[in-house]
Length: 514
Ligand SMILES: NC(=O)c1ccc[n+]([C@@H]2O[C@H](COP(=O)([O-])OP(=O)(O)OC[C@H]3O[C@@H](n4cnc5c(N)ncnc54)[C@H](O)[C@@H]3O)[C@@H](O)[C@H]2O)c1
Image (spheres, rainbow, N blue to C red):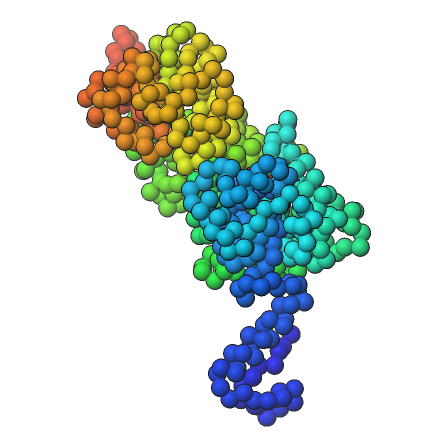
């Protein structure tokens, strides 16, 4: 479709040009007006605010819902966030963030102050006049590892009666391939007269760096099955795309699969390097050096090649289980990911047994656990390795004292009989061994002499490789790092002569507990 553009008149130009503006100023006004007129019927009512401002409803005010809402408001849109938990709505409305995420509380309060972000317990109010309704509710694991879509389905069913004409439903939650199409049918059943668009817009933010991940994304993926939803989502993300963020527009099914496959591949990297770390311990190598050497290959990259106690969090464990289940359900087994998910869970329990055996712990021994969150800069303990490790230690009669700078209260909801301490040195008091499970920056700064003074024993298990071995050794502590076969336990390969059998290499066996 061609539109008249002001400019020098050509010999056969149509007579629809009523006047010929002479100045650049007039041309700009005309182009701006045409653009705005064209946008009106497609995207509906423009609220007051910036030129590109859109009215958006968010369903679900968890990590993803609040982060997305605050960031979209920061980009100039007008956000109303609906949450089913009324207590959470009250706290958010008072400017209180119910979880820890660096910088988010400040951004949220700033946008609330500008009137661009509100929270409500009324879905009707949230949906009224919305051009887009994002669904960001939880998608936990079902008993068979597949995704439990019941929260997404319930949200869509509740939304259907309130959905304005022309509004696009955008699924932000991580869902299985085909969900957007299924939700479209579900809403169409409820509202036969409504022509519904349902799109997929998976979220890739990481807790702890959520704002930066949203504002400077590696990519924005929009999965749209019709031009209306694609135009709308392009408009939503225009401020980020204008700043250089790559946007991939594809089908809803592709977008849904991109999210799951990406998380599965990242988890595979972690699982792989954890296995490599065990091998390093067995042969007397250092996993950090090996990982660096692998990661320098640009085809592989350094990210996610850090050995640890097993991945946790709200995404990787459930998303890998779901990816495997989706494969099974569709007759396309994802054997690699299937094995990975199971090995990762076994690793967490094995880490606890490793602490007990290597430190020679018995019933009544005390272990100090430093770090409960599944990673630093969050208070999220969902499927955190620390929970499994602590429970396994307790089953062996070990008493646990724990510290975490942010996750103490979230962890306390899941754990029994743990002594939570306000500072790391307090957790170390009388401990026979200490296990560092989360890479909080403050643990890097721990004073080895103070640690040794507080502890009853001398064993330090660093499952994040953040402690400096030199001061530890100087303070008389025995440091064991993950994947480091040069620590005291592992001996170098020995050559042994067996009469009549030539020369054999005898290597230290791989740790039996992993
Ligand atoms: N947390 C992350 O780091 C992350 C990153 C990317 C994607 N995701 C995905 O995003 C989705 C949300 O994750 P999250 O961590 O924000 O979950 P969350 O549990 O923190 O938040 C979900 C919120 O939705 C609310 N809710 C549930 N049903 C509702 C309904 N019918 N109406 C209104 N509110 C409702 C819950 O009360 C809760 O506050 C999941 O699918 C997750 O896999 C999460």
